[in-house]
Structures are given as structure tokens and as C-alpha cells.
Length: 373
Image (cartoon, rainbow, N blue to C red; front, side, top):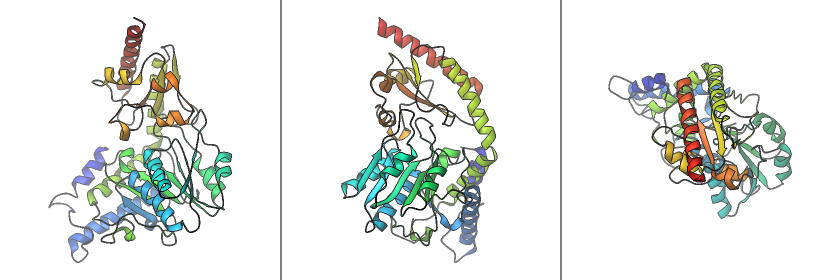
């Protein structure tokens, strides 16, 4: 987490800070907490170029995705029961759609091409008179591949449906302008942009007109769409981290690009490697690579004391399994089972990445030698 975000959060935790329940507006302490939350909401909204009243605080992108998809599905099922998404989405979207499918909704899971892209024609061809929602991620969390969400949003804006974007991997890393891009719903997690875990938000365009069905019922916080006592410290931490991410967006991107170049150069010294996903349309902080004759499970176990790498999303790291994202792209066999995801960011140094590349090359070479023996 950004140190500035942690420092801002600390000011909201003890008797010397703004610690009160922000819903307790009967006294000054609650008013101060509520004012701080609304300033944070306005700051995040200014960075997304949207109306602050259209931002709903949640526990993160998983909850935001659930609220967006289920909220639209339940509210508009009389208009239609068809939802379009892709087979390479995060499980927070896939499992939500599969749940709705089990209740009678029709779900189209579009397959990306070998580069991880879902074409606009493919999306438009899937739309029917029953379609009420299209849900696609901006940046894939396993490959870093980007989707042109602005182009998709423009193509869908005149259709009688909603467009939801999972922006967990792109917020704070790519410019998102909700005034220019007609996205209807957008999910964000704070910890993906150096903020605290357990906080995020959902943008709902024209919230007052969009009849979103809530998942929870209770005290009526967040306009009744997400009840529960608001965590002032986490919201302040998110706003602080978001502001810093926007200030450092260019330098962070350049830094990650440099680290990617160093790592790719080192890995290219090996034979039998394959970089997965469109290498021209991706963010540089994620590298997905397969090694011939080396299982990803063996490589991760060999490196676990030195490096934190994975086969896919951290949400699935309890068990080593093949990536559903790569499988959706049509990648199978040894290339699928030899794939690992390597990611880095603002606080990763060039020395870190050089050491990581060296260790990976050493272990790949050693494991291949054992296989041949």
C-alpha cells in the first residue's frame, strides 16, 4: 500500500482523529467523518470524471461486480433475460453469471481469440432483443491484455442494454473518463492501485434513474444500495491512493515498461518459451509466459521461498490449477500447464526484477535437466 494512504488511514482510527460513525449525524464527530467520506467520494469522482452521487462504496471489485450484474439482472428481467460476457473474465464475473444462469437467465460466454481479445463484431453479433447487460473487463488480470472499452461502449450506447466494465486492473493505471465513455457501470478495487484491501466502489451512471436492485438490506447507507457502516479509514485510504496513482500514472507506466523489458530480455535467453496474450495491447506490469518441458506447479514450488508468482488469479491460489483465461484463449497442452503469471509495480526495483529473472532462468534450466534425466 502507498505509505501516504496508510498515513491518511491512521488519522481515522483513534481518539485523536476522525473516528466516529459517519452515519451518526446527530453530533459533530459523526458529521466530521461523513464530511471526510464525501470529500473522498468527490475526489475519486473527479479522477473518473463522473458525478460523485453515482459512486457506491463496496468491499471491492468482487462485490461491485456482483451488485452490478445481479442488480441489473433482477431489476430488468421483465425486459429480457440475456447477459453477454467473455469466458476470460475474472471469477467474480464468471461465477456471478453462472449463478444467474442456474436461476433461468441466458448467458453468452464469448471466447477471446488466441491473443486474448474479444472482437467488437463478436460482441455485437451476440446481442439479441433479450439482452439486458454486457459485462467485460478492461484489463485481464492474468495476461494484462486490454480491451478497447471506449469503442465497445460507443457501439453499445444506442442499444437498449447496460454496459458494465470490471476496471479492477486498469483504474489508476489507465485514464478512465466517464464523461467521454458511455459506460453504465464500472467496478474498482482500492488494493489494485496501492490502496487498502477490503474497499472499492461501483459507478452507476444516472444512479437515480437506474433501478439497481441491492444485494443487501439494512441501514440504508449508500443510497440504500449498499447498507452497512461505512469504513471511513478505508475510504480515505482509497481516495488518497487513487489521487497518487493518477499523479504517478505516467511514471508508473514507464517504470513498469522498463521492468518488463528487463525481464523479457532475461527470459528470452531461454529456448522454448511463449509469451501469452497480445504483446502490443497490454499493460506492462503483467507478464504471462509458458516454458516448454516445465510444469508451472514445479516452477512455483521451486521458487516459492524467493518469488511470489502464480498460474492465475490470486483468488484461485489455494490450489494449483490450469488458467481458465488461457484455456478460453484456446491455449492447451504443455503451453497451458507450463504457464505462470509474473507481476510487479511501483515498488519493484530493477535489482528485484533482475534477480527474479535470474532465479526463474536458473530453475527452468534445472527442472528441464531433471526432466531429461
